[in-house]
Image 1 (cartoon, rainbow, N blue to C red):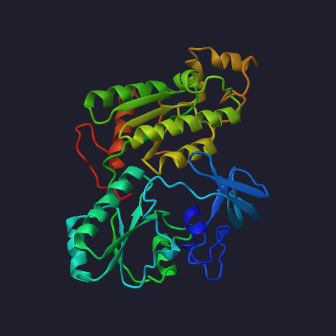
Image 2: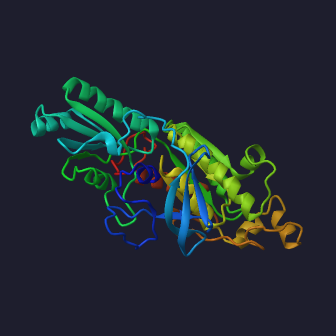
Image 3: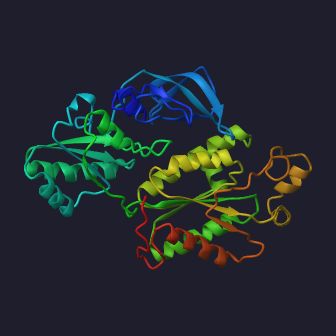
Length: 383
């Protein structure tokens, strides 16, 4: 959305507004949520390079740990786009004078034939809406460019996918309308996820059975050959990836951010990332979801084993030390655990066997449109 604002592709839109606000003449009202409120908020790219500054005029709590902010955007630096630098749609592209087609998801021979019937050989502007997965976006763009060269009289443009606005507005259609192409041929397809993996987050108290289920799941999937699973267990991650971090809220957040980043890369490459930290806070789990879902499904499994049962298993003696005051900020004792309200599955290892728990997780993965243990696709779920 930031690119669309800075490029002028949304007309008079010059910043962000609070949810529910409206602006005369704005085709879309962008919204922005921030973990903190400040007079100015710097927006960065994936490499932490500052791209723009939001001059905050108003703010409103989202009811959790973040804030909606409203203000104008000031560009600091042009983004260095990974793909389609030359084909990026701009206000100077001059589309809207002839036929325009909007393409997303895939471009098939049937789509090409449909266009031949609708526009014949007249000049055509083909606008490719690229998904968050840069590899998939590059493949789609290449398919359309190859077809456009063979057809002739076709200009191919690239528009990053900004999804739907907070108010449900079709952002891509709004961009075309602002450029004078309110009427266009819509060849956007919602395609099932087939070439990416998934992330499974087990969350629950220490001793609830998260790691045991996670290891059993990885063993089961490894033997089936569906995915190449990667286990990101809490203790292992702490030792290898997050050495030096403490257990206060800020360090826990940093640890989970690292797990989410690695998990997203695993899933993006077609693997299954199985994560088993405690992840006690809803805001941290939401942050992990936001980092993963642009590239892969994010499944939350809440291991709800009661505290008394988890404490009775205290193999490491951690609960005993926490009760004695030797460990501070211990989840379930003097630090809260926020029960997930968005869990895809709830398991209790005090009433279910590990085999039953693993079967439940596999069923959830299959229900989300991923491969079953027999290696077949069970659902063409729309993204």
